[in-house]
Image 1 (tube, rainbow, N blue to C red):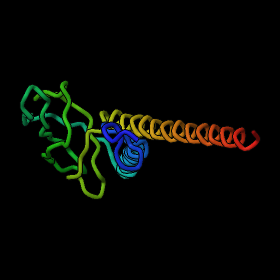
Image 2: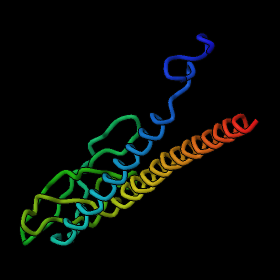
Image 3: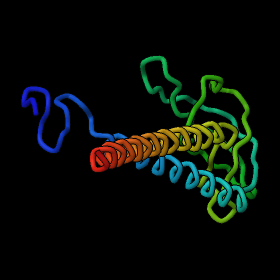
Length: 163
């Protein structure tokens, strides 16, 4: 065994062990799937108790670096005027522009811009499926190599015993 290229337990220097790769990718994939499903369920639960309202963007609080900031909107819910900051903003949002927001009927201060929610959910789910798939493929390839090695050893031992 060459000690310059091989470390303990037969792992080559500089090589990433397969179990680390497959485990990490599978774990990240499962977490991303969980985030996607959580966001989806959270959005559906909110929308089940939400009412739409026409809102006017008053100002945009800049995030810097040319990124869209978060808008401060004014809307009417149950006959009362509310001014609240949204959690997300898009590049199309500008002061004076009218947008449709949804507010919680039980707590009208809980307001969201739901038009832009779908992309984050889809991104989480697609990335989760991709990462989990890569982890599964790595596991499958590793298992196939182990089977081939075992068969090669069996054939080598079997042929040497019969001579």
